[in-house]
Amino acid sequence: MEVIDLKGRKGLIVGIANEQSLAWSAAKHFHNAGAELALTFLNDKAKSYVAPLAQRVGVKLLLPCDVSRAGELDNVFAAVAAAWGRLDFVFHSIAWARKEDLHGRLTDCSAEGFAESMLVSCHSLIRMAKLAEPLMDKGGSLTTLSYFGAEKVVDHYNVMGPVKAALEASVRYLAHELGPKGIRVNAISAGAVATRAASGIEHFDELLNETRRKAPLRRTVEACEVGRTALVLASDYAPAITGDVIHVDAGFHIEGMVLH
Image (cartoon, rainbow, N blue to C red; front, side, top):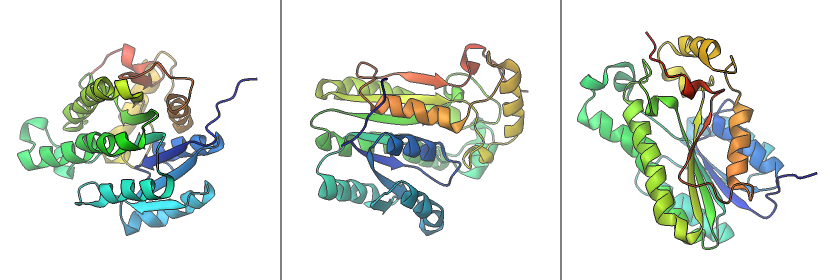
């Protein structure tokens, strides 16, 4: 019997908000495969949700990380370097937009709001790649989360559409630049899952219903399905996969649609 074994591997997961987070599902699968993990939390309020989860997977490195605050991301990687001296994989699961930009038309999005969303949701992956590079001297894997709205128009996704499109393009360029060092970079385009982040999208329940109706598998996806895909990408079962956007969405992306 073949099993995915991450014993001896060190991984950083950024973006767990609570037990419903896709990043938490990924963390559980990494842990079950034997990896040692470091987790981050956004602020003190988020820590109250993340700390109990960290205990469940035996995490010793639980670190604050608001990528919009100067120095916090650098401090995370400094702590990882001090504790481990290396890093095998990173799971990036952070995205943000101002409420008025997420709920309003892209046409009306302010320059400041667009820049903030790009900084948190996209450029943070680029910064993590730069900080992870010296710790992945024997190769490694970076995985981020995207959504179908990066490829086609999805009503109510608004500013996050072009931001996620930029994230997916960044995945390809990072994969190109870091590939010679054996560092793979991929994105998982996850189907609609009821998470805290998704709750900020207006009419999200309509999107879930459309997914059940139109996806080839006639269902939505579960967080564990995204987590298992993240596990494969971090393992030796995906050594030749890089620069890719892997859809875990019950086939929804092949249908194409605009919600009205």
